[in-house]
Length: 503
Image: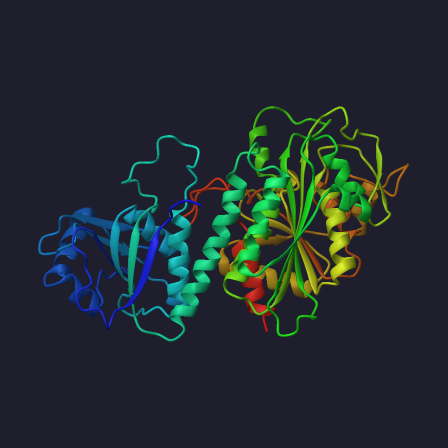
Protein backbone atom coordinates (compact mmCIF):
# COMPACT_ATOMS: atom_id res chain seq x y z
CA UNK A 1 0.00 0.00 0.00
CA UNK A 2 0.95 3.64 -0.25
CA UNK A 3 3.09 5.21 2.50
CA UNK A 4 0.04 7.07 3.82
CA UNK A 5 0.21 9.16 6.94
CA UNK A 6 1.39 8.58 10.50
CA UNK A 7 -1.01 9.67 13.26
CA UNK A 8 -0.33 9.88 16.98
CA UNK A 9 -2.96 10.85 19.55
CA UNK A 10 -1.97 12.64 22.75
CA UNK A 11 -3.84 14.27 25.61
CA UNK A 12 -4.23 18.02 25.61
CA UNK A 13 -4.07 18.01 29.40
CA UNK A 14 -0.94 15.90 29.72
CA UNK A 15 1.01 17.63 26.97
CA UNK A 16 3.39 20.30 28.22
CA UNK A 17 5.44 21.38 25.20
CA UNK A 18 3.68 19.90 22.17
CA UNK A 19 4.78 21.99 19.19
CA UNK A 20 7.65 20.35 17.35
CA UNK A 21 10.10 22.83 15.81
CA UNK A 22 10.04 22.88 12.03
CA UNK A 23 6.50 21.63 11.54
CA UNK A 24 2.99 23.04 11.32
CA UNK A 25 0.72 24.05 14.17
CA UNK A 26 -2.94 23.54 13.29
CA UNK A 27 -5.67 25.42 15.18
CA UNK A 28 -9.43 25.50 14.65
CA UNK A 29 -11.77 28.47 14.88
CA UNK A 30 -15.45 29.13 14.30
CA UNK A 31 -16.87 32.19 12.57
CA UNK A 32 -15.98 34.32 15.62
CA UNK A 33 -12.28 33.41 15.07
CA UNK A 34 -11.85 32.65 18.79
CA UNK A 35 -9.28 30.10 19.99
CA UNK A 36 -9.94 27.70 22.85
CA UNK A 37 -8.00 28.58 26.04
CA UNK A 38 -5.71 25.55 25.64
CA UNK A 39 -5.08 26.29 21.96
CA UNK A 40 -4.18 29.88 22.80
CA UNK A 41 -1.83 28.64 25.54
CA UNK A 42 -0.10 26.18 23.19
CA UNK A 43 0.22 28.74 20.40
CA UNK A 44 1.66 31.28 22.82
CA UNK A 45 1.12 34.95 23.68
CA UNK A 46 -0.07 37.06 20.81
CA UNK A 47 -1.35 34.14 18.72
CA UNK A 48 -5.00 35.20 18.93
CA UNK A 49 -4.11 38.74 17.84
CA UNK A 50 -1.94 37.38 15.03
CA UNK A 51 -4.80 35.23 13.74
CA UNK A 52 -7.25 38.13 13.91
CA UNK A 53 -4.92 40.50 12.00
CA UNK A 54 -4.11 37.93 9.30
CA UNK A 55 -7.77 37.01 8.96
CA UNK A 56 -8.64 40.62 8.31
CA UNK A 57 -6.01 40.95 5.60
CA UNK A 58 -6.98 37.65 3.92
CA UNK A 59 -10.73 38.10 4.50
CA UNK A 60 -10.82 34.79 6.31
CA UNK A 61 -14.21 34.35 8.01
CA UNK A 62 -13.76 30.97 9.71
CA UNK A 63 -16.31 29.28 7.48
CA UNK A 64 -16.31 25.50 7.16
CA UNK A 65 -13.70 24.05 4.80
CA UNK A 66 -11.64 27.22 4.68
CA UNK A 67 -8.09 27.77 5.87
CA UNK A 68 -5.68 30.55 6.70
CA UNK A 69 -1.96 29.70 6.41
CA UNK A 70 0.68 31.91 8.03
CA UNK A 71 4.27 31.16 7.05
CA UNK A 72 7.06 31.74 9.63
CA UNK A 73 4.63 33.26 12.17
CA UNK A 74 6.26 35.69 14.57
CA UNK A 75 6.71 34.34 18.08
CA UNK A 76 5.92 30.68 17.20
CA UNK A 77 8.38 27.80 16.95
CA UNK A 78 6.28 26.25 14.16
CA UNK A 79 7.23 26.98 10.56
CA UNK A 80 3.58 27.47 9.62
CA UNK A 81 0.43 28.27 11.51
CA UNK A 82 -2.57 26.68 9.81
CA UNK A 83 -5.93 27.99 11.01
CA UNK A 84 -8.91 25.95 9.83
CA UNK A 85 -12.46 27.24 9.83
CA UNK A 86 -15.22 25.09 11.25
CA UNK A 87 -18.23 27.30 10.50
CA UNK A 88 -21.17 27.49 12.86
CA UNK A 89 -22.63 23.98 12.62
CA UNK A 90 -23.45 22.04 15.74
CA UNK A 91 -20.80 19.48 16.71
CA UNK A 92 -23.38 16.68 16.71
CA UNK A 93 -24.00 17.14 12.99
CA UNK A 94 -20.41 17.81 11.98
CA UNK A 95 -18.68 15.55 9.45
CA UNK A 96 -15.52 14.81 11.39
CA UNK A 97 -14.05 12.58 8.68
CA UNK A 98 -14.32 15.41 6.16
CA UNK A 99 -12.68 17.77 8.64
CA UNK A 100 -9.82 15.31 9.09
CA UNK A 101 -9.41 14.94 5.35
CA UNK A 102 -9.41 18.70 4.83
CA UNK A 103 -6.78 19.11 7.55
CA UNK A 104 -4.52 16.44 6.07
CA UNK A 105 -4.87 18.12 2.69
CA UNK A 106 -3.60 21.41 4.14
CA UNK A 107 -0.64 19.91 6.00
CA UNK A 108 0.35 17.65 3.09
CA UNK A 109 3.53 15.66 3.64
CA UNK A 110 4.63 17.85 6.53
CA UNK A 111 4.88 17.21 10.26
CA UNK A 112 2.02 18.87 12.10
CA UNK A 113 0.67 19.29 15.62
CA UNK A 114 -3.12 19.53 15.58
CA UNK A 115 -4.98 21.03 18.55
CA UNK A 116 -8.34 19.33 18.05
CA UNK A 117 -10.71 21.57 19.98
CA UNK A 118 -12.21 25.05 19.72
CA UNK A 119 -14.63 27.09 21.84
CA UNK A 120 -17.79 25.12 22.52
CA UNK A 121 -16.46 21.91 20.94
CA UNK A 122 -14.46 19.14 22.61
CA UNK A 123 -14.57 16.00 20.45
CA UNK A 124 -15.25 12.62 22.01
CA UNK A 125 -13.69 9.28 21.15
CA UNK A 126 -15.87 8.63 18.11
CA UNK A 127 -15.27 12.13 16.72
CA UNK A 128 -11.49 11.85 17.13
CA UNK A 129 -11.56 8.43 15.47
CA UNK A 130 -13.57 9.80 12.53
CA UNK A 131 -11.16 12.73 12.19
CA UNK A 132 -8.17 10.38 12.03
CA UNK A 133 -10.03 8.15 9.57
CA UNK A 134 -10.61 11.08 7.24
CA UNK A 135 -6.96 12.12 7.47
CA UNK A 136 -5.75 8.60 6.62
CA UNK A 137 -8.10 8.32 3.66
CA UNK A 138 -7.09 11.73 2.28
CA UNK A 139 -3.42 10.73 2.45
CA UNK A 140 -3.82 7.70 0.19
CA UNK A 141 -2.46 7.90 -3.33
CA UNK A 142 -1.73 5.22 -5.92
CA UNK A 143 1.61 5.94 -7.61
CA UNK A 144 3.19 2.49 -7.57
CA UNK A 145 3.83 2.49 -11.30
CA UNK A 146 5.19 6.03 -11.58
CA UNK A 147 8.96 6.32 -11.91
CA UNK A 148 8.72 9.93 -10.69
CA UNK A 149 6.73 10.36 -7.50
CA UNK A 150 4.60 13.36 -6.58
CA UNK A 151 6.42 16.37 -5.11
CA UNK A 152 6.92 16.16 -1.37
CA UNK A 153 5.17 19.45 -0.73
CA UNK A 154 1.98 18.52 -2.56
CA UNK A 155 -1.19 19.07 -0.53
CA UNK A 156 -2.29 15.45 -0.58
CA UNK A 157 -1.45 14.40 2.96
CA UNK A 158 0.71 11.51 1.74
CA UNK A 159 3.78 10.80 3.85
CA UNK A 160 2.95 13.35 6.56
CA UNK A 161 2.84 12.95 10.32
CA UNK A 162 0.06 14.32 12.49
CA UNK A 163 0.09 14.56 16.27
CA UNK A 164 -3.49 15.07 17.44
CA UNK A 165 -3.85 16.81 20.79
CA UNK A 166 -7.32 15.98 22.07
CA UNK A 167 -9.35 16.22 25.28
CA UNK A 168 -9.06 13.16 27.50
CA UNK A 169 -12.01 10.78 27.12
CA UNK A 170 -12.80 7.14 27.70
CA UNK A 171 -12.73 4.69 24.83
CA UNK A 172 -10.37 6.76 22.71
CA UNK A 173 -7.77 4.05 22.10
CA UNK A 174 -10.37 1.46 21.10
CA UNK A 175 -12.11 3.89 18.74
CA UNK A 176 -8.79 4.92 17.21
CA UNK A 177 -7.81 1.29 16.57
CA UNK A 178 -11.16 0.68 14.88
CA UNK A 179 -10.69 3.74 12.69
CA UNK A 180 -7.23 2.58 11.68
CA UNK A 181 -8.53 -0.87 10.67
CA UNK A 182 -11.41 0.71 8.77
CA UNK A 183 -9.01 3.01 6.92
CA UNK A 184 -6.88 -0.01 6.02
CA UNK A 185 -9.98 -1.75 4.66
CA UNK A 186 -10.97 1.22 2.49
CA UNK A 187 -7.40 1.59 1.22
CA UNK A 188 -7.21 -2.13 0.45
CA UNK A 189 -10.36 -1.79 -1.65
CA UNK A 190 -8.90 1.24 -3.43
CA UNK A 191 -5.67 -0.62 -4.14
CA UNK A 192 -7.54 -3.49 -5.77
CA UNK A 193 -9.63 -1.19 -7.96
CA UNK A 194 -6.63 0.88 -9.03
CA UNK A 195 -4.43 -2.06 -10.03
CA UNK A 196 -4.05 -2.64 -13.79
CA UNK A 197 -5.75 -5.73 -15.21
CA UNK A 198 -2.49 -7.30 -16.38
CA UNK A 199 -1.50 -7.43 -12.69
CA UNK A 200 -4.81 -8.17 -10.99
CA UNK A 201 -6.36 -11.15 -12.75
CA UNK A 202 -8.78 -13.51 -10.93
CA UNK A 203 -6.02 -15.71 -9.56
CA UNK A 204 -4.00 -12.77 -8.19
CA UNK A 205 -7.14 -11.20 -6.75
CA UNK A 206 -7.89 -14.43 -4.91
CA UNK A 207 -4.32 -14.58 -3.63
CA UNK A 208 -4.59 -11.06 -2.21
CA UNK A 209 -7.92 -11.83 -0.58
CA UNK A 210 -6.35 -14.89 1.07
CA UNK A 211 -3.97 -12.56 2.95
CA UNK A 212 -6.91 -11.93 5.32
CA UNK A 213 -6.05 -15.26 6.93
CA UNK A 214 -3.42 -13.32 8.93
CA UNK A 215 -6.29 -11.51 10.66
CA UNK A 216 -8.16 -14.71 11.48
CA UNK A 217 -10.47 -14.80 8.45
CA UNK A 218 -11.16 -18.29 7.13
CA UNK A 219 -10.56 -18.48 3.37
CA UNK A 220 -11.88 -20.97 0.82
CA UNK A 221 -10.94 -20.58 -2.84
CA UNK A 222 -12.97 -22.41 -5.47
CA UNK A 223 -11.26 -23.09 -8.79
CA UNK A 224 -13.03 -23.94 -12.03
CA UNK A 225 -13.09 -27.65 -11.24
CA UNK A 226 -14.85 -26.90 -7.94
CA UNK A 227 -17.31 -24.57 -9.65
CA UNK A 228 -18.19 -27.10 -12.34
CA UNK A 229 -18.87 -29.64 -9.61
CA UNK A 230 -21.19 -27.16 -7.88
CA UNK A 231 -22.94 -26.31 -11.13
CA UNK A 232 -21.86 -22.65 -11.42
CA UNK A 233 -22.34 -22.71 -15.16
CA UNK A 234 -23.56 -19.09 -15.48
CA UNK A 235 -20.39 -17.74 -13.88
CA UNK A 236 -18.17 -20.09 -15.89
CA UNK A 237 -19.89 -19.07 -19.12
CA UNK A 238 -18.64 -15.52 -18.57
CA UNK A 239 -15.08 -16.74 -17.95
CA UNK A 240 -14.81 -19.19 -20.83
CA UNK A 241 -13.53 -16.60 -23.31
CA UNK A 242 -10.55 -15.66 -21.15
CA UNK A 243 -7.13 -17.26 -20.85
CA UNK A 244 -7.39 -16.47 -17.12
CA UNK A 245 -9.30 -18.98 -15.01
CA UNK A 246 -12.17 -17.88 -12.79
CA UNK A 247 -12.13 -18.04 -9.02
CA UNK A 248 -14.69 -17.75 -6.23
CA UNK A 249 -13.40 -16.72 -2.80
CA UNK A 250 -15.37 -17.36 0.39
CA UNK A 251 -14.21 -15.37 3.44
CA UNK A 252 -15.59 -16.10 6.91
CA UNK A 253 -15.12 -14.04 10.06
CA UNK A 254 -16.55 -15.80 13.10
CA UNK A 255 -16.60 -13.10 15.74
CA UNK A 256 -20.07 -13.67 17.16
CA UNK A 257 -20.76 -15.14 20.58
CA UNK A 258 -22.23 -18.26 18.96
CA UNK A 259 -20.10 -19.66 16.11
CA UNK A 260 -23.19 -21.48 14.81
CA UNK A 261 -25.25 -18.29 14.45
CA UNK A 262 -26.18 -17.47 10.85
CA UNK A 263 -23.79 -14.94 9.32
CA UNK A 264 -24.46 -11.63 7.67
CA UNK A 265 -23.33 -12.01 4.05
CA UNK A 266 -21.77 -9.68 1.51
CA UNK A 267 -21.33 -10.65 -2.13
CA UNK A 268 -19.22 -8.79 -4.69
CA UNK A 269 -19.03 -8.77 -8.46
CA UNK A 270 -15.39 -9.22 -9.45
CA UNK A 271 -15.01 -8.83 -13.22
CA UNK A 272 -11.29 -8.05 -13.25
CA UNK A 273 -11.59 -6.76 -16.81
CA UNK A 274 -14.73 -6.39 -18.88
CA UNK A 275 -14.26 -6.06 -22.62
CA UNK A 276 -17.95 -6.79 -23.13
CA UNK A 277 -17.11 -10.17 -24.64
CA UNK A 278 -18.53 -10.87 -28.10
CA UNK A 279 -20.85 -7.87 -27.57
CA UNK A 280 -17.66 -5.84 -27.32
CA UNK A 281 -17.63 -2.36 -25.83
CA UNK A 282 -16.49 0.71 -27.72
CA UNK A 283 -12.81 1.52 -27.31
CA UNK A 284 -13.44 4.90 -25.68
CA UNK A 285 -13.00 4.51 -21.95
CA UNK A 286 -12.60 0.72 -22.06
CA UNK A 287 -9.49 1.07 -19.90
CA UNK A 288 -11.81 1.95 -17.02
CA UNK A 289 -13.21 -1.57 -17.14
CA UNK A 290 -10.33 -2.68 -14.91
CA UNK A 291 -12.58 -1.29 -12.17
CA UNK A 292 -15.48 -3.63 -12.90
CA UNK A 293 -14.49 -5.54 -9.78
CA UNK A 294 -15.16 -2.67 -7.34
CA UNK A 295 -17.93 -4.66 -5.64
CA UNK A 296 -15.57 -7.53 -4.89
CA UNK A 297 -12.90 -5.06 -3.74
CA UNK A 298 -15.38 -3.56 -1.27
CA UNK A 299 -16.20 -6.97 0.18
CA UNK A 300 -12.52 -7.76 0.74
CA UNK A 301 -11.94 -4.35 2.32
CA UNK A 302 -14.98 -4.80 4.57
CA UNK A 303 -13.82 -8.21 5.78
CA UNK A 304 -10.44 -6.67 6.58
CA UNK A 305 -12.11 -3.89 8.58
CA UNK A 306 -14.34 -6.30 10.54
CA UNK A 307 -11.48 -8.65 11.37
CA UNK A 308 -9.12 -5.79 12.28
CA UNK A 309 -11.43 -4.53 15.01
CA UNK A 310 -12.50 -8.06 15.96
CA UNK A 311 -16.13 -7.29 15.23
CA UNK A 312 -18.54 -9.29 17.37
CA UNK A 313 -20.46 -10.74 14.46
CA UNK A 314 -20.35 -13.75 12.16
CA UNK A 315 -19.76 -12.34 8.70
CA UNK A 316 -19.30 -13.93 5.32
CA UNK A 317 -17.83 -12.36 2.19
CA UNK A 318 -18.11 -14.05 -1.20
CA UNK A 319 -16.67 -12.77 -4.47
CA UNK A 320 -16.92 -14.12 -8.01
CA UNK A 321 -13.77 -13.34 -10.01
CA UNK A 322 -13.69 -13.56 -13.82
CA UNK A 323 -12.50 -11.83 -16.97
CA UNK A 324 -14.97 -11.19 -19.80
CA UNK A 325 -13.05 -11.53 -23.07
CA UNK A 326 -14.01 -12.08 -26.78
CA UNK A 327 -12.11 -15.28 -27.53
CA UNK A 328 -13.26 -17.95 -29.98
CA UNK A 329 -14.43 -19.95 -26.97
CA UNK A 330 -16.44 -17.05 -25.52
CA UNK A 331 -20.18 -17.32 -25.01
CA UNK A 332 -22.34 -15.84 -27.79
CA UNK A 333 -25.57 -13.90 -27.94
CA UNK A 334 -28.21 -16.59 -28.36
CA UNK A 335 -26.50 -19.11 -26.09
CA UNK A 336 -28.54 -20.61 -23.26
CA UNK A 337 -26.79 -21.40 -19.97
CA UNK A 338 -28.05 -23.18 -16.88
CA UNK A 339 -27.30 -21.46 -13.60
CA UNK A 340 -26.47 -23.24 -10.35
CA UNK A 341 -30.11 -22.80 -9.31
CA UNK A 342 -31.25 -24.84 -12.33
CA UNK A 343 -32.86 -21.79 -13.96
CA UNK A 344 -31.91 -21.27 -17.59
CA UNK A 345 -30.75 -17.97 -19.08
CA UNK A 346 -30.78 -16.85 -22.69
CA UNK A 347 -27.77 -14.67 -23.44
CA UNK A 348 -28.93 -11.59 -25.30
CA UNK A 349 -25.88 -9.42 -24.65
CA UNK A 350 -22.56 -10.80 -23.39
CA UNK A 351 -21.83 -7.40 -21.85
CA UNK A 352 -24.58 -8.06 -19.29
CA UNK A 353 -22.22 -10.48 -17.58
CA UNK A 354 -22.02 -9.31 -13.97
CA UNK A 355 -25.49 -10.56 -13.14
CA UNK A 356 -24.53 -14.05 -14.37
CA UNK A 357 -21.58 -14.07 -11.96
CA UNK A 358 -23.69 -12.82 -9.07
CA UNK A 359 -26.54 -15.23 -9.79
CA UNK A 360 -24.42 -18.29 -9.04
CA UNK A 361 -22.60 -16.76 -6.05
CA UNK A 362 -25.85 -15.51 -4.49
CA UNK A 363 -27.44 -18.91 -4.92
CA UNK A 364 -24.44 -20.68 -3.43
CA UNK A 365 -24.34 -18.36 -0.39
CA UNK A 366 -28.05 -18.55 0.44
CA UNK A 367 -28.21 -22.32 -0.06
CA UNK A 368 -25.00 -23.21 1.77
CA UNK A 369 -24.70 -20.69 4.60
CA UNK A 370 -28.33 -19.69 5.34
CA UNK A 371 -27.39 -16.05 6.06
CA UNK A 372 -29.40 -13.52 8.09
CA UNK A 373 -29.28 -11.24 5.07
CA UNK A 374 -27.35 -10.77 1.84
CA UNK A 375 -26.06 -7.53 0.36
CA UNK A 376 -24.44 -7.64 -3.05
CA UNK A 377 -22.41 -4.86 -4.64
CA UNK A 378 -21.74 -4.54 -8.34
CA UNK A 379 -20.69 -1.98 -10.93
CA UNK A 380 -23.60 -3.39 -12.87
CA UNK A 381 -25.27 -0.90 -15.20
CA UNK A 382 -24.67 2.39 -16.95
CA UNK A 383 -28.38 3.00 -16.44
CA UNK A 384 -27.82 3.74 -12.74
CA UNK A 385 -25.45 6.53 -13.72
CA UNK A 386 -28.16 8.06 -15.87
CA UNK A 387 -30.60 7.87 -12.96
CA UNK A 388 -28.44 8.87 -9.99
CA UNK A 389 -25.19 10.27 -11.36
CA UNK A 390 -22.31 9.87 -8.94
CA UNK A 391 -24.15 11.08 -5.84
CA UNK A 392 -25.84 7.83 -4.79
CA UNK A 393 -25.60 4.09 -5.28
CA UNK A 394 -28.81 2.50 -6.47
CA UNK A 395 -30.39 0.30 -3.80
CA UNK A 396 -32.88 -2.44 -4.60
CA UNK A 397 -34.30 -4.52 -1.74
CA UNK A 398 -36.92 -7.07 -0.80
CA UNK A 399 -36.83 -6.01 2.88
CA UNK A 400 -37.92 -2.59 4.16
CA UNK A 401 -36.19 -2.79 7.55
CA UNK A 402 -32.84 -3.73 6.05
CA UNK A 403 -33.18 -0.99 3.43
CA UNK A 404 -33.98 1.63 6.07
CA UNK A 405 -30.97 0.61 8.14
CA UNK A 406 -28.64 0.83 5.17
CA UNK A 407 -30.04 4.23 4.21
CA UNK A 408 -29.30 5.50 7.73
CA UNK A 409 -25.75 4.13 7.54
CA UNK A 410 -25.33 5.93 4.23
CA UNK A 411 -26.36 9.26 5.71
CA UNK A 412 -24.00 8.73 8.65
CA UNK A 413 -20.96 7.91 6.49
CA UNK A 414 -21.64 10.03 3.42
CA UNK A 415 -21.79 6.90 1.24
CA UNK A 416 -25.40 7.45 0.35
CA UNK A 417 -27.88 5.10 -1.28
CA UNK A 418 -31.19 5.77 -3.03
CA UNK A 419 -33.88 3.12 -3.06
CA UNK A 420 -35.05 2.09 -6.51
CA UNK A 421 -38.15 0.04 -7.41
CA UNK A 422 -38.48 -3.72 -7.63
CA UNK A 423 -41.77 -4.82 -9.19
CA UNK A 424 -43.07 -7.83 -11.12
CA UNK A 425 -43.66 -5.50 -14.06
CA UNK A 426 -39.93 -5.55 -14.74
CA UNK A 427 -40.04 -9.35 -14.97
CA UNK A 428 -41.92 -9.04 -18.23
CA UNK A 429 -38.95 -7.28 -19.81
CA UNK A 430 -36.67 -10.27 -19.17
CA UNK A 431 -39.04 -12.98 -20.31
CA UNK A 432 -37.47 -15.28 -22.91
CA UNK A 433 -39.09 -17.32 -25.68
CA UNK A 434 -36.50 -20.04 -25.27
CA UNK A 435 -35.35 -20.08 -21.62
CA UNK A 436 -36.54 -19.14 -18.14
CA UNK A 437 -35.24 -15.59 -18.60
CA UNK A 438 -33.06 -13.32 -20.69
CA UNK A 439 -29.93 -11.75 -19.24
CA UNK A 440 -31.03 -8.25 -20.23
CA UNK A 441 -34.31 -6.48 -20.79
CA UNK A 442 -32.97 -3.75 -23.05
CA UNK A 443 -32.37 -0.05 -22.41
CA UNK A 444 -35.55 0.86 -20.58
CA UNK A 445 -35.24 0.37 -16.83
CA UNK A 446 -31.85 -1.27 -17.28
CA UNK A 447 -30.76 -1.14 -13.64
CA UNK A 448 -34.21 -2.30 -12.45
CA UNK A 449 -34.40 -5.29 -14.79
CA UNK A 450 -30.89 -6.29 -13.69
CA UNK A 451 -32.02 -6.20 -10.06
CA UNK A 452 -35.18 -8.12 -10.91
CA UNK A 453 -32.96 -10.75 -12.55
CA UNK A 454 -30.87 -11.09 -9.37
CA UNK A 455 -33.96 -11.32 -7.18
CA UNK A 456 -34.64 -14.75 -8.70
CA UNK A 457 -31.55 -16.10 -6.95
CA UNK A 458 -32.16 -15.00 -3.36
CA UNK A 459 -35.42 -16.77 -2.46
CA UNK A 460 -36.82 -15.33 0.79
CA UNK A 461 -33.53 -14.16 2.30
CA UNK A 462 -33.58 -10.44 3.22
CA UNK A 463 -31.51 -8.92 0.44
CA UNK A 464 -30.15 -5.69 -0.98
CA UNK A 465 -28.56 -5.17 -4.37
CA UNK A 466 -26.32 -2.11 -4.63
CA UNK A 467 -25.54 -0.89 -8.14
CA UNK A 468 -22.33 1.06 -7.58
CA UNK A 469 -21.41 1.86 -11.18
CA UNK A 470 -21.47 5.59 -10.42
CA UNK A 471 -19.57 5.55 -7.11
CA UNK A 472 -17.19 2.57 -7.18
CA UNK A 473 -14.67 3.97 -9.64
CA UNK A 474 -13.86 7.31 -11.18
CA UNK A 475 -15.94 9.07 -8.54
CA UNK A 476 -15.47 12.81 -7.96
CA UNK A 477 -12.67 13.93 -5.64
CA UNK A 478 -13.70 14.69 -2.06
CA UNK A 479 -11.89 15.74 1.10
CA UNK A 480 -11.44 12.06 2.01
CA UNK A 481 -10.66 10.67 -1.43
CA UNK A 482 -8.29 11.73 -4.17
CA UNK A 483 -8.10 8.25 -5.71
CA UNK A 484 -9.72 6.94 -8.90
CA UNK A 485 -10.75 3.85 -6.97
CA UNK A 486 -12.83 5.19 -4.09
CA UNK A 487 -13.18 2.10 -1.89
CA UNK A 488 -16.89 2.98 -1.75
CA UNK A 489 -19.03 0.77 0.46
CA UNK A 490 -16.52 -0.33 3.09
CA UNK A 491 -17.45 2.48 5.49
CA UNK A 492 -21.15 2.09 4.69
CA UNK A 493 -21.34 -1.63 5.42
CA UNK A 494 -19.05 -1.47 8.43
CA UNK A 495 -21.40 1.14 9.93
CA UNK A 496 -24.44 -1.04 9.19
CA UNK A 497 -22.86 -4.01 10.97
CA UNK A 498 -21.63 -1.96 13.90
CA UNK A 499 -24.96 -0.22 14.49
CA UNK A 500 -27.32 -3.17 14.12
CA UNK A 501 -25.73 -6.62 13.98
CA UNK A 502 -22.85 -6.91 16.43
CA UNK A 503 -23.45 -8.80 19.64
